[in-house]
Image 1: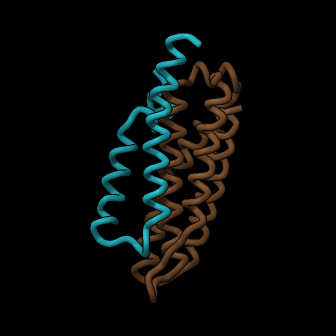
Image 2: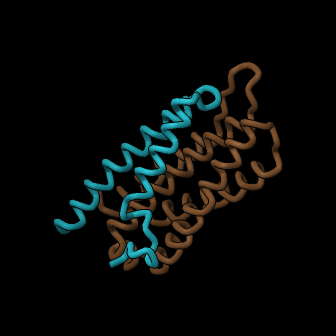
Image 3: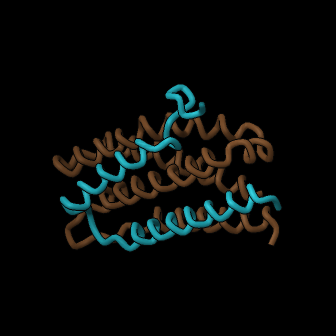
Length: 63
Length: 127
């Protein structure tokens, strides 16, 4: 295993941990969104879609 | 632990976590189960797409060398997710405001299918 793969795996592991934590919170959610939660939905969407990973090749995400 | 085994385990966690989240719709008395399920599916799909897109973006060359064609599949999901997650959200808001179900069930079905595709790609990455 080379250094690049090790770094990639470490980076991926933290993302997986974060993902599982979010899924756990979603699964534990009780009931429909409150107004505050609905506002957080918009904020989270803006946060994610402004990132490189969500850019398609056509949008210049694969330079 | 070799790379492939650890990735298989990570991918397995992803699939199980996403399935668990999408299967639970706990409602308070009087709340609409379809609405809550739609909201949970929206959030589960959004986060599943995100982890797939980020992992693929950051490891594109390696993933493509091991699983040719993955980038094209993920690109299709990027386009689909960016068009249809907002569509589902608008349907959720409209349903929540007026209790109409038609658009919501259709929008939900699109995202549920895309979520299954994302989960398949994530599971394949670990193979």
